[in-house]
Length: 497
Image (cartoon, rainbow, N blue to C red; front, side, top):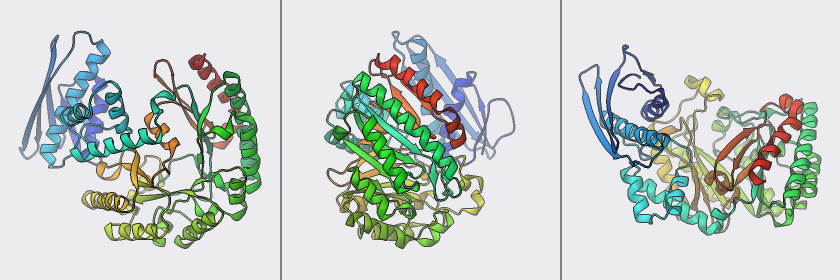
């Protein structure tokens, strides 16, 4: 769909308008100078000292026409940057209304296109708004549906019950440790993940660099007397390395990090069942790590084969029971709505199979066409369900989790997510992942160690966020891990003094 956009002279508005367009059409192109297009959109923007008024008109080639307008007050005390935000908010408000009228599609998340909707609700409640005031603001100013507002509130309430001191943890940190290897690469994946077969030299070099990062960061944390809230091993698949390598890695962590016995949560993603062995589970048990993920994604073998997961449904079930037998009492499982070839019938079957296992927590993802994934590069090869069927599957997940005692505790959204929906983490009482709450609500720094690990530094004094990423490929990481470790410590020194 090609849009010809008139009346926009500031290119800072281009991306917000593109994001709103993408909510309605899979392929969109916005043209900001006169050119042939499917739809023409004209804006008239009037900004005075105390308000902004925006009129919008949309016309297509068949003469169909839609109009919208919106007005917002601008306080004289606002900075130029803050005034720009008000104008941008008003512009996307008008544009969304026009596209909703034109297409008949109602966006339940309104004008929100960001990853973390619940962070907005946390912010408004911390600023002193009542729940009623915050909900009205989300509905009237952001056009979010009542259903999604209630979901946001349930999650915020749950998070504050799980982590009552959530707003006071900026003086602590969490640690993410990235292991960039997997048995194979899934078709939808864009994480730093490399097939481990035949790469032992690369694995050895990587682990040497990771051990160095852990030692140096642990030394800094001890010197500054900074506590660790949670540690999360992700990737890739952290259980792709051998049991011996896992054992040495956890030993290094326990020696290097301060107060490991008081860390609230240690998680290791064992997401690929084909990486789980009795020896590896024994290593986890040795180091008192009992929160793991075993991710089926789907309980249909044909789907697993299509997306490049070289394990069977039965292997997922067998490894789940093995983990249970060996004392793993906090297991998460991931399911994905909208996988190729799957509709409501197939997803309902996956839910029925999940009922037989009843993991402590369950993350329900909606498939996202990520730019760098094999699935996005070959869309014609992967047939996925339409918007209405995707929404029905999500509705079934909401009903099923509620009926089986799971409550939503974290939520995030992604670009190009099917149906413009969301990913929701559900947990049984007392089994919520604290790390998932911390990474989503951005109340403290997350220090990323390892290949492809992203750090997000939250200044404890100002709340300003600084992002920093390690190299994604093992060779670059192996060549420069010392430099990246020093750079992270320098940022932390500036924040924590």
